[in-house]
Image (cartoon, rainbow, N blue to C red; front, side, top):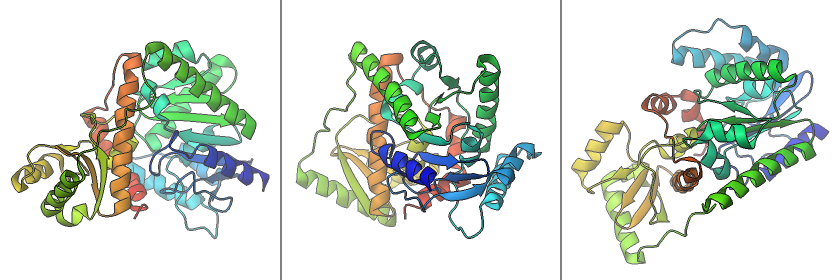
Length: 355
């Protein structure tokens, strides 16, 4: 099908490290009856025309008529059940949690990514005023919890935009989250993305902010190996996977949902003793996924892939933090925002899919 060939090509184009990290981002195509969306926990770069989950749009649309419970956990369970009921027969993959949001956007194609260049803006203190100045036709959405709440919130913003402008938005910028672009053709999608990225590159250049991190310094190999042995002794099976990122400044707090999903909200910093690690677990509620040590930054996990992605997301967060200086500095997620994501079932599922 032409639609699926096109969205596969778009998924590959925007599935590179310039646009997403880990299993982040998603994409979709639709006609009048069916929405084809990227499955949860998969990568944009790995999509094929047969990978997309087909959903019945009429059944998915029932989500907007539900009387949902106020409790966040009960609400997300109900929403997940409605989404799964909309999956067409013969498929087993779980659709992206943002499928309903893709369904309400008017274009035949939707591609959602988290480019560092974009997040340097949307995770900054002056994000709203800068979006209004640089992207006159874009829709700006203040921070909303991912999932059903995000879908309903963006839906209201889209309806308001459409009423005011007489047309629906093609570019949506979400605070501390990323970018949604919708278009009817693959060429239009590429053009819209190109405009956003080129505009931001010019802004960083004017501000004198580098769009890449300086290459992290590397500790001597023997120091890195000794630190790995120390971390394995302290963390045991939680450090089966271990990835070294070098020496660089790690943001003290999380800037985006994906950072929390794949690297947790806070890195471990402090004495490398059993007592101090136990104190971290007690305070944060989890074993460290990122450790900042005298030898540099290490990603930790129950698999090598998880450890590597933790470092990848931490490096990305460091770059985003650097870029926010062009727009007044960083706006970190609040404690309430962090806690919602850390306990959100959909994100547990997404990380689990990495193995």
